[in-house]
Length: 480
Ligand SMILES: [Zn+2]
Image 1 (cartoon, helix red, strand yellow):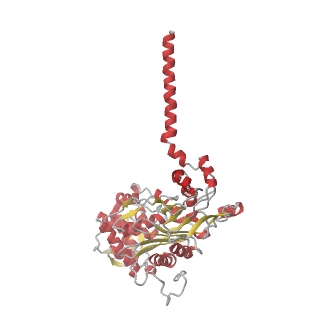
Image 2 (cartoon, helix red, strand yellow):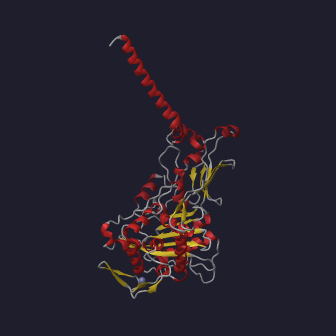
Image 3 (cartoon, helix red, strand yellow):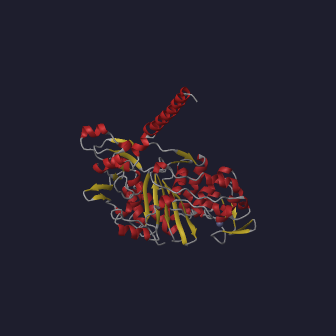
């Protein structure tokens, strides 16, 4: 190789190296710049956040849930909203959870929320306030209904996906959770106070899943709304005996009657007509976790329904919410939202607005995505059947005088003890403004526990005062 060739080779190598450096620099400084600026591990952000007082977290109606004080972060409502707020540490530290963690850039007004011009004009920089969609009265009723029990309660506006209440019990005191002995005691408890049950608790849906089976049957055309199916108390399906909870049988029922009476035989028959493929298709439509909520959620766990499912009891069990089907209370709420809203459900959201310390709007909640579960006609049929369940069926404890309520109760088998009780409800039927889900662990039937709590949450959301006479007890026969 002569000298000229060597020089040429060297020049080529240099060119490649230069291009490499240019590529790396542009990757970090152009393509990944936004990510770096927003990362909570960015030291410059952490430094700025130490100097800036954090904003507050408030409910839609102005109740403060988290705020900075001279003694540190303060949570005025303590354990009743602990799974919403979480608890906060300084930016970049790992000891935080809930919205304090998910919204920390907004609360500290850093990264994408930083505006240096504004800070320069106004002097001392301050964090932003985050206004939630939560209604403090609805939240209080949800928490009061649950606090002596173990379970989840949530309320959502089906018209747009705004979450009105989200309560989980048992809970913890976010004011003290960062003290190491408190942390140790709480995390050692077997009843999992740190678990946000409405979003991360996975339960068999039990009979509340019959609203989905009914929709699937109607949509596929395997049952007609005016058809009558027979329940004689028992039914033999592929050599397996299916029994109804009502031993003597329900007699002739329309599909809507069957939902109102929660008849097991009619739903077993619907499941058999639906078959494996269609039921599997419906399991695939179950609402999945949505980023718009800003909090961690669990996806539904669905059984595989393989070839054997057709001949075994699996189809029947799944259609009644048993077997390996596990869902969160939020998933059930979103299904009910679809029946309230002509077959469509909005992705849920919690952040209404971000406001700066001078009251100016920094960010408004974006329109959340919509998903179609079923047709408007099928949703209407299911809604009417759910209203029957409250008016003259098994969900009667959800009834509110003067308000058209639709709902469904259920008790879901629990291998570890007594059944879990469910209630899903919505109102007013003619123009639904609230969907409520209540789940109470290990108490047996849904009627006695979950429905009365759900009814009170609906009442709070619709601003319907309690009727003093005859109501007697605190939550209306909680123990019934
Ligand atoms: Zn029956």
